[in-house]
Length: 124
Image (tube, rainbow, N blue to C red; front, top):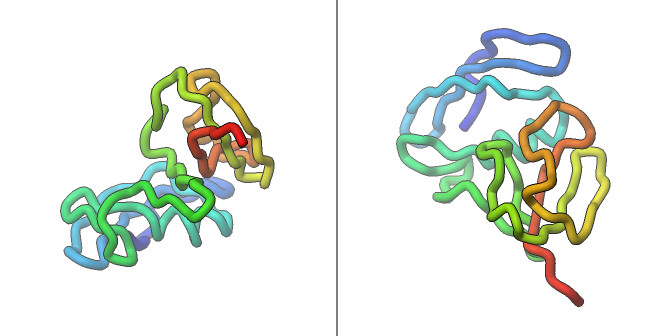
């Protein structure tokens, strides 16, 4: 998905019309945030509701990196069962290990404390 036009802005938050590069489907984004992470990681990973592809043409929203981190895009309030033990990365760079998923604040508040990635905790 890409930004076709920005509808409104307030400080670092914005609403925009998003357009799929693959099928042309348009949708409205109401949770945009102007920062480097959002523009370089969140928007390119957004999937089109019509064709299911992200910017690079891959299907599916959850991309896992080599360390098991899954980008969290604030698309759902709780991506795992509430009793799942997870590790999380926050927007400000903090990593918290061994957290109970149901006790965390998943919806974004547009702060440095927003969860941007998670993984299922594994004991080493």
